[in-house]
Length: 474
Image (tube, rainbow, N blue to C red):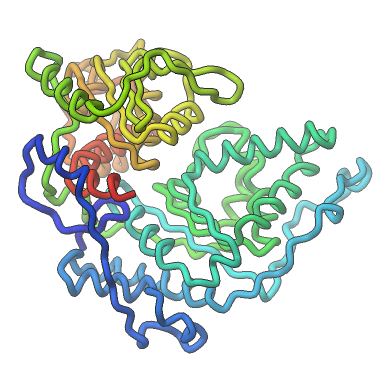
């Protein structure tokens, strides 16, 4: 089955010229997808005016927009089953705030750590994992966009897991300040209660654990969300057993892994096809090298997109109590930075998420070829690409070298570098050779290797005609 960019689900077109980028800004179309009564369970007959994962999937296959894939057909069946259960779902009541008062020191010391047994009314979640290009985003789109009408009353939320954990930490901090709570056990349950009250259906993109603070609170957080009737669907690049591998105090995180394996339907998406590598019509968004011709081409795009609006210089936005300078921006959501503006300073995911929320189009110039001494810059650049991708931000880049060479600092390093089977599989999936990626000594671990591979793949996808169309419509 052919995977196309998030929410567009459009057919691949022929090679597009640079001018196509501008004409796409005026395009708009919608999909009218009929719904067959056979696709719904008896319990959901009252919702026949709405599509389901199964009906939407088969409509797209029949119309030729998607390629038939027996493996993903089975995954869609799981999404359909959960869709039908949600249509009939009557979750347990969310406890009142007064029911979650802090426990005494005595009760906390002698409380059991065993998670509460699930009630019959609670639904198990779905955990979809696979490597780059296995269709995680498309499947999440398919599920979330076809949630039954009852989901509106239950409350639904889709969020990148990185952004979700930032939100959780903010809430934890607020609870501690407001109530003077100190213990983690005191804070997590009330935060989970608030999250459950806002949304009983949570969809997480890119579930991953790389931070010890996240690892320490996730078991309790997931426990409470499940207890309060929250149904979660997660996508990840790792099987639960591989989460937070080799992390500090990983033993404390193992109960969270057991909880995921016991309370979620863990499903492997890998079918040995990278759908994003099937040719699409590329619109030029990544320019290299930094020469007169490419500078002029990028400047023409900037001039075209900003010709009817005022350009503000050195504006600022507030991010978590500090001000972030925006060198050039417009009221229409376009901003321009140099690489050092965004990655040469100690910025983090929260900064990039805020930037991509405020601006729908980013220009980044002067991206260099990075060396081992610039590993932090490389990580920031990858985090920035992820934020642009997740928030559907158009990205135009002027770089010294092609994307796959940005992190290849020393071809001779390959001789001394061990490439694991998993790293080799990731490289093969993306069509990246030893000389291009394996030679980089900047990234030493599998998680970093995967993050780099994902950034390459996402930049390819963000250069497609369908991606730009989806961003404009969104």
